[in-house]
Length: 400
Length: 106
Image (cartoon, rainbow over all chains, first blue to last red; front, side, top):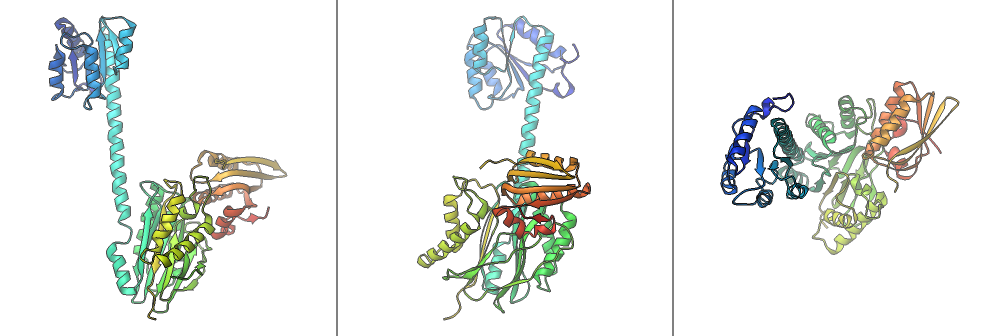
């Protein structure tokens, strides 16, 4: 057999089925395939027998003669293409006919390729090899795609596990009287947003929300990095500027160039009724009181984590008394566009918040976060182009 | 919205002025790559990136400016930003970007 047409090692075990009512023709094809290095093909003289065998023996390639006694080869071709199991099977049609319309019709019905009898051993081997190789590549590719999909699903699950558990949020509510409502939706399978809460003592807990630039795999890997850093961070000083500096020093050594994170890091103190915080480049969270349309923006000016070592962060403080709320969100909220390409922008987020607080006076059973997101999704073009995280912390109204 | 990132450049007296327009964001890889090459090949001592016509920049865009800064540093090139407007200006301000690259008024 000529170099280039013989079966390469990987294809020698390929299963080939031949359907031809002419015994002599069967024997010729059988001999050609064996000579090319393939194992013995399955030979059938009728469509009925072949169809029965196809149920149990799954060929990698079918050689089909168009002129059969019991069923017209064209009809069989149509049937095979309609059946899910053989819809993608390479089918090499062979015929004694040289009429172009037969050829056209075979292709229209889904033939993969066409050979006219008589054909040489070299031609048959070359065509068989091409279609088996294609099939092998497609199978390998779809297996790889499936594996990547499974890996992504696993990574997504692992990333979900980084977020606070319902049990932890229940602890925050029980111990500090602070309710946490949250919304987290990555725009790809994996996102670059992360948030968390950590109890410090009976009056104080830390809250952080980070957003790594970009989304997808590289941003997601960074969320694992910062989660690990938080798990090992010494929060005993309860000083957000100290924690920020520690995070920046650690991350600046870990992150590849051009990658960084914006962050809000607050220590909520329900004994002193304040939140002390430091922030760097994140969208400005809002702090206010339920039922009061006057609220304030947090000061977030600061170098994002990962710009480089040696940065310092300013300490900020805001009141967080009974009845207070705190609302943080990622930049998907101000930056998502509506159908006309207009962004909500910072003022738009403020309007959303004001409308939600007003609506809550009429519908007190609904959470403000629900009301904000409901209005947001009415206008935002979906799917969103970036990860959306929104967190709402609130304290119940005090007595009286 | 015009979308992709474009730039026009003008060199004189050892300074290269580059006017960028469109969007500097996570989506546009090719436009940014061209700009990065421009920094790497610039025959100048001073490189001014004029942002006054930049319509939009997202957080990934800020990371890209850091890459431009690093590329400029590698070549001993003095780099500055000029004239950011609107939300671009605000993003730069919130992240104290003037500590990374000097920002000039328009």
